[in-house]
Image (cartoon, helix red, strand yellow):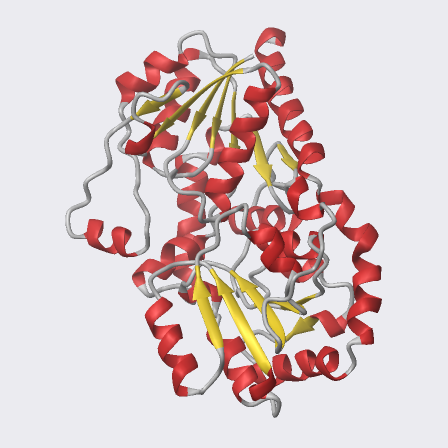
Length: 378
């Protein structure tokens, strides 16, 4: 097939959406498909299979986007029309200007479209201090629908959670497939354990942003009663890094903050004792699944706005959103009885198999094939 993939946001693989895009692009190319990616990532200029469009200029808002490491693509209709010529299917990653323009052009040209749902409303409203404003989030979801998803033949939801949430907000069902973004095989591979620290080690992966709520973990360890015997490894980058560093220093919590390359993560994860996922807003949290695949037992925030809570086997792996006391108690359960870590690791052995990336990408490929075939039926 000739497939066009439209990425409003694409750059370094330091967030779930970008990783999902690269994984899909790589899989499709490896399986013989002709893939053209439209994005605004200047590093892709001249690279085979990439069409680079300008960055959108929103004046003062550019500073806000830059602070959050976000670069949005400008909807270059000429470039989109050129790459869509002869395409079998167009797949759109985000409900932003480039994706919206692509959907409109594809509809006019009669090209089938699919689109992934990778952005929660809070991922947008958090930038304007409205993350907890229900009306602002509801309006954002309505905009997502009216601008993009109502024009799409098949919507890809990474989890049942986000399908239910979005359809409740827009009060209608859409043609869809629920398919995990999947976990790369390198996280499943057995490896010799090399401890990160002599202390009881907790790993926490996620962008340093408001919705990831890493401060809950710092506060939990600060009041745990065994603070001196614990070290936290925060893996990520983002605008709140300095604030989190200051909080850890103020609470005298031993914490390491750094960005890990993809090839560094599996070994780092396998060297920890426990994984804690603090995010209160999350569509799937592949980072949590990567930790589970690496053999770590997770303790997960049970936020109503996060799909990640569904990865918890039972209550020992869940803590109340924003409640550092509850998180401290859940960590203490595993800290004081390490045999429980081994027991829960065994419980997760079969659970994690459903998220192997190869199987998930096969399902994505089939979705695109079915979409392309629908054009022939018409």
